[in-house]
Image (tube, rainbow, N blue to C red; front, side, top):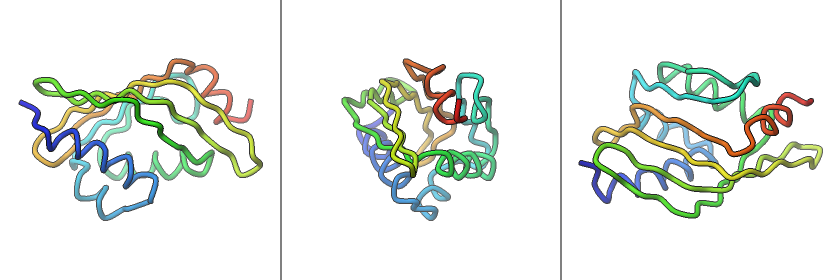
Length: 131
C-alpha cells in the first residue's frame, strides 16, 4: 500500500525535475521505468528504461521549460495521482498551459511507471513541435 512518503516522493520528484537534479532522478527512477506520454507529438510514446526516460526529459526541456502548479496529490493502494496545471515556456516567451493528471506507480523509493494525461494534448503537441 502506498504510504504518506509516496506523496512526498512525488512532490520532491517535481522539484528535482525542475531543478535538473540528476542525482535525485537517478536514485528514484527505477532501472526499468516506463514513462508513458500521450499524443502524437515528438515526445509521445512509451519510453522504457532510466536512460531513455532521462533522454526524454532532456529533449522536453530543449523544446520548452515546464512549470507545475500542483493542485492535489492523492494516493491509493498502488499509485499516487497528481492533479495539476502545467505551463510550458519557450525561450522566445511563447507559453502553453493545460490541466493535467499524472499517475505514478511506485515501489519503495522508486518510480516504476508514469502516465501523463493532458487535457489539451493536441495543443501541447502543436506547441512543443512548433506547429
